[in-house]
Length: 283
Length: 314
Image 1 (cartoon, rainbow over the protein chains, first blue to last red):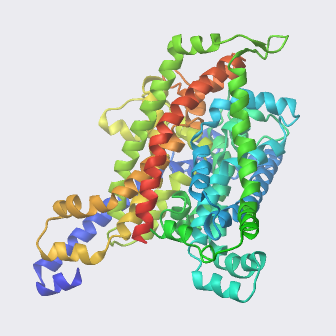
Image 2 (cartoon, rainbow over the protein chains, first blue to last red):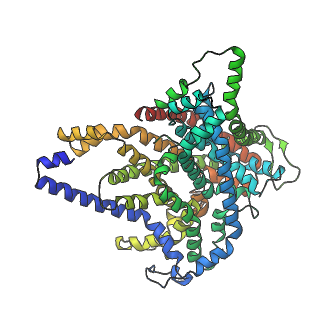
Image 3 (tube, rainbow over the protein chains, first blue to last red):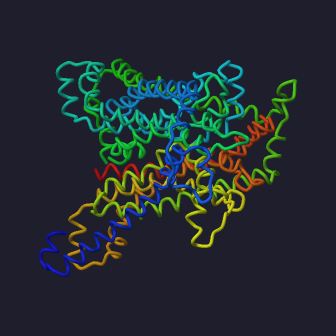
């Protein structure tokens, strides 16, 4: 680009600069427009309830933390369940996924491609189709409304994605390092511990990140299979919408608090987000 | 393709081993895979087998006496039921529209973000945020603070354009739900397409520019073909998630007004939660799964192609 513009300075340079500024403005407008609902959610969360349902909408108001205090007073069990279901299922995914990815990448089993496609095909089966029977199974195994049920299902939900992803990171471990370890007489466990895991640990972090996002945000299974003992944050949000009365500020505060952890994590880890969401296809 | 090569020629398979050892070797290879494989089979396949079983049973939660065999009557109900066909059609419509519009917006945003301007990383961050908002939170915030006819922000912003207190969720329910789906999934498409754009070899674009190719021609002849696998990947993954959209439907419109926004997931949810019809829901589920398998066969083929291309590029 610079090489071209250097050849004809002056008007060409000016056109390029103004183009750059023009498109920059377009991009900023698009970005702000897209972000607006989030901004509105956060703004509304700081309003007193009476200022949240006005016409025209209020943009200036004296901010209050009243609704946040209410949220923090009521969300205890919900956030506990969400954290347990998210953390434990993510750990289980990694514990099951790392060896499986190893068997599909480093010392692959015979029909490893079939294995890969089996895992991904389970992501295509709509879990909604089995929700009635799933309810009956949970009832009969006494897992209904138990946090373990969510853990088991979230693990199964994220495992295929994690296996694809971890495998893509393992394929990047240099072959020479693996060979050197083997020549050193390292067994497979030692090879895993001393060569593979250190190399792929950033990859494991981004895998965990994706699993956390999907487990934290999940509503369908939680809504169908839990009521009180395992109800998660998305259900807390639903409970913050009452049958009558003003609730918009309260709802916004609850929605903000429930969303902020994932938003922050996603902002920090933007790079690994792309790779994780594409299941390792995009480096 | 890096992926296949590493798989087909791993460092140690080439050695010839005696038969006993090779059997042990095969098991050593299989062993790490087994826990995940067994877990996935048990947790994801058994519910579908049970679904198959219940699809031939008459079983209502609220009727005492439990399940009893009823043959294919659940299925004949599914196929003669206009509600099922309606839900199926709306699922397809919602998914196709949301995925395509999100992809078009995603390509546009990605092209914007691929240019240099002040605060580019901030704008990128703003644009990916909707994807990170909890879907239940997004649905409720859109339904209330954004779209409410009396105090919603959207009506306020559109007032200069002659829009007065539109009750979006009753008059444009399906459109409203689709808008929220698009809003949440455009960032996903943007990220994937942007990754594609940034992987584009700069020297080729340079050459096109030197040759005097216009912006549009460059996009059509060079950029778009290069982006194609990324676009396919985005459409594929986006469809997998969006076809199951439930949160927005349940929390914004509850499938209504009437059945205007009832898609398949919500329809199944209602069959179980309101009609207590386990048998009927199971039969609907089996039909859904069969339809999914047909679509997924094509999708898997696409997967294989897309991922191979990816490997070749890296």
